[in-house]
Length: 177
Picture 1 (cartoon, rainbow, N blue to C red):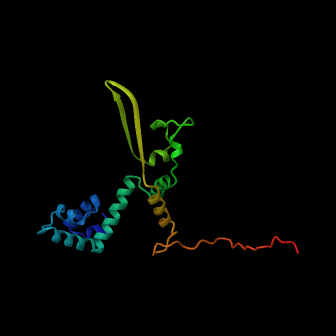
Picture 2: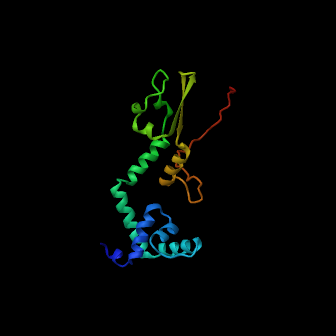
Picture 3: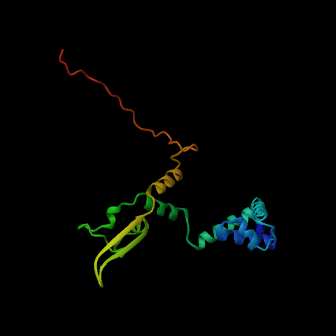
């Protein structure tokens, strides 16, 4: 056990464990066994606990531990966001225009799908058609997240100037002297 964890009380350690479940300080405060009279009290006290440097360190360590167990790394998250940001709906179709089967999609195309709905069109007991609806994750928000990660926006969210080569334009008269 780390030195910082030893400095925490049993309830504080329990709070850290509970907070890392859902990042909800109010709920974690209650689940850790603290007594709170009403939601505002639990919220305020949970927030107070989160301002404790020892608890902040313990939360950071626990989150790092959980991320390691789940193989969550910044590189993997960025790769997934990039798959959404640069998704191309054409990868979901065969050359003849038919929708590919789900197992035929590459990883990036499959990751860009938020949901799939398949509705059968029936005439009596016979299926006469099928409607397939594919909803993709929001490409714009994925691109915005990547831009922010890469520092392409200023704090006020305006774009940073890009160093483009200067271009000179000269107008030449078409009349002959």
